[in-house]
Length: 102
Image (cartoon, rainbow, N blue to C red; front, side, top):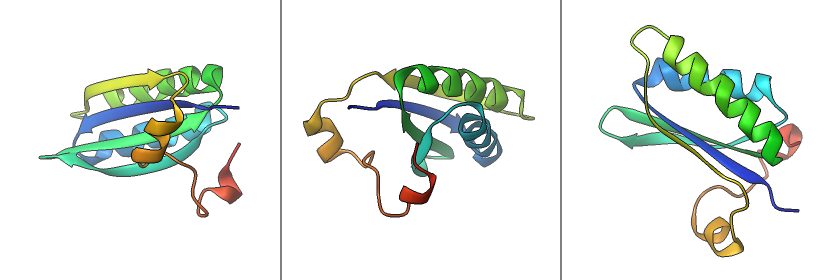
């Protein structure tokens, strides 16, 4: 079964940290990727069932925006990514994810 992908990109580290925390606490999702996007922007990527990703994304966006100076640059959900996208982008589950995977 394919899992949805949710991405939040913020300006600065504190908002992306708040978003990541809220997302993994707000839904049955797994954090699969985190990195510096460009300039001072950071991104966090989650995967899980579509309904859970939608709930987690709402909570993550809210948390990032409520962080002092928090600015969400972009956010999106890919409900059913095709295998070729999963194979190319760093959104596949890894060995480090297994203990936390839903």
